[in-house]
Image 1 (cartoon, rainbow, N blue to C red):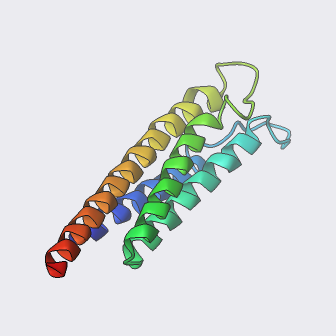
Image 2: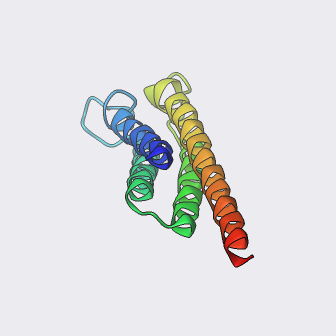
Length: 142
C-alpha cells in the first residue's frame, strides 16, 4: 500500500496541472473570439498534465517494478516538457504583460517542476524496491 502513495500523488499533481491550465491559468482570450498565439502552448501543457496523471494512475494500479520505472520516467519527461513548452519550445503572446506570460507560464513552470520531482521520487522508490527484491533473491539462492 505504501508504494501506491507516490504514484497517486503524481496523478493528483498531473490532474491539477491539466485542470489549472484549462481553467484559471489558461491562454489569453481575445475579445473577437480569435485564438491567441499561446493557445497551442496551453494545449501542450494540458497534454503533459494528462500524461502525468495517467502515468501516476497506472503506476498505482500495476505492480511491476520495471513498469513503475518506465512510468516514472514518462512522468519526469512530462514534467520537463510542461516546463519547456510555454515560452521555450512554443511561443507565447508578444507582450509579457499578457495572461499567458503572467499566469500560465509561472503556473506551468511550478507545476511541471512538482510533476518531475514527484516522478523522480517514484523512480527512486522503484529502484529501492528492485534492490530489496534482488537482496531477497540472493538470500533465497543461498
